[in-house]
Length: 232
Image (cartoon, rainbow, N blue to C red; front, top):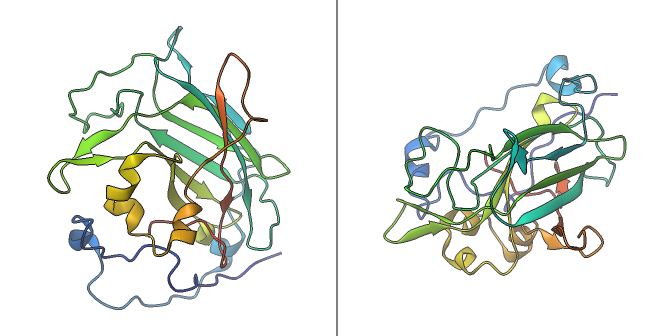
């Protein structure tokens, strides 16, 4: 069954040009977007059911024969359609900074230490019920040069492919109570407190494992009025 593309309702996703998020001025389109009819391949594929990363869970805390430094956490949730329907075999890509606030990437020149036992990246595929589960390290805040004394709040990046290329979503998950949220232009570029609340993980005692790791729930809705805000 094909499901045609429907544009998101206005006021859900952050605008392409958010002045407080200064780099958007360099990449925002200067002309009105042109609607292009989606082909059959865009509305019916891809399928990740047989992908090498077909597991619905991943543990990022063990690498190269050692344990990553920092606070272990568990992120669990489901990928859903706009009607609450679970999206099976959706590809999730996750990337994040380590506990010191540094990415394992050559372009990250922050002088915080790297962790040889933490890559900060994974690919998984949701199960038949749309569920996924990640064991990872709580990322640290880090400075960026958007404005004077700018710091990004703790966050984890998610890229999600649903049942079609047209349903890809790229977003960030934040942690409740982070004081940097009130100063972050990326988080604040999402219109409305209700939409921003969908970017916050929810602490969940049932996901928490005693004496091991705190647990959080984070569902991702691909589209519709209740969709998770995404970056264009």
